[in-house]
Image (cartoon, one colour):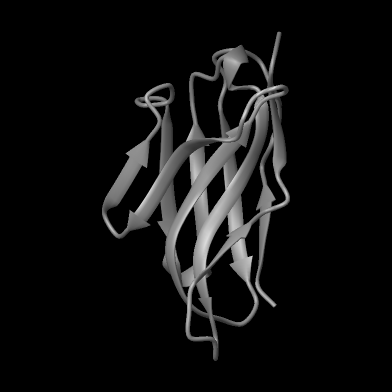
Length: 121
């Protein structure tokens, strides 16, 4: 059984910072892309940042220059440092990873349970 567990969300004032973490655990053979999505009330889930492979990253235009995604492959963990937060960044943030479980011949996409980020004064 593979699962993703997120942490690090919370309430922050505009201009503040938060760091999200997402750890993959279970019977894992390999992890390909890892990334973050978010869903604001009444809106569709959208890609925020993704690291499809080593030294490759992609960001939504709305977060470029403010958010930074990184990975610790030894810990099967992906992070997202969020700086200069704005009220429009308020959403539930979901971790996403493409993982091949041990003893399985293919890759599956897994999602975390979500963590709330609220930017408000």
